[in-house]
Length: 249
Image (cartoon, rainbow, N blue to C red; front, side):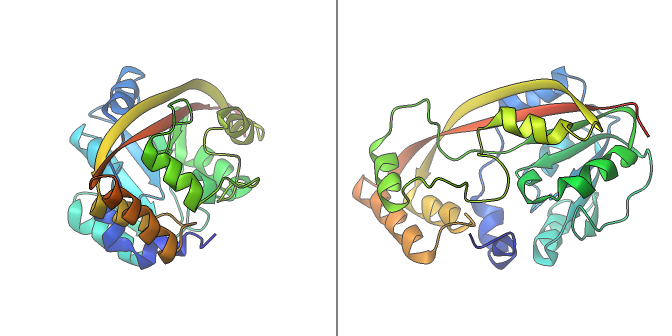
């Protein structure tokens, strides 16, 4: 595993290659009352703004925390109305009871939860919410496409996850990790399946941003797309966990 610094080294590729989160995710957040025109949102691990943009469009006021200086710079240029603080979720000072909603989009697996959970709890107002989600690249409920068969050949599944924490779709284990300290209780869990068509270059860029793929493996994946006609349909899943701030010290 190359680690989170991998994203900083590929900031430009990350900005153009990472796909948006699905529309049904944003619709559900709005239905649950988290995404409103008056919401004060703390976003942890904002990257180049894949989640920031839709929240701004909904009228939310966002303070974004991003450890990579290059990623943060791109975020500022895209969304000058957003306050961006460079640093980790563990290290950046945060005001107390200043936000209605905290968000970790494709970032919670890098956090030291023993530090971050009480810190987010302090930063949220009473009855605040913590929404955690990620894009999972590949949907195990869908039969393998010819491209996914090639991906498995290039990168066979391993017994341990390619990044810290439970598996990407082991939502039950993630809920346990996020609630065991008592700072948050579970409010809502949902998985959103979706699909997107990608070209050879889009796959090359996207797989370059994966922290556990090396250059040779990325080239093989792009070559597989080319052999399959230059475009492939990818089936993904976005699991959402919504937590409510617990009433505790």
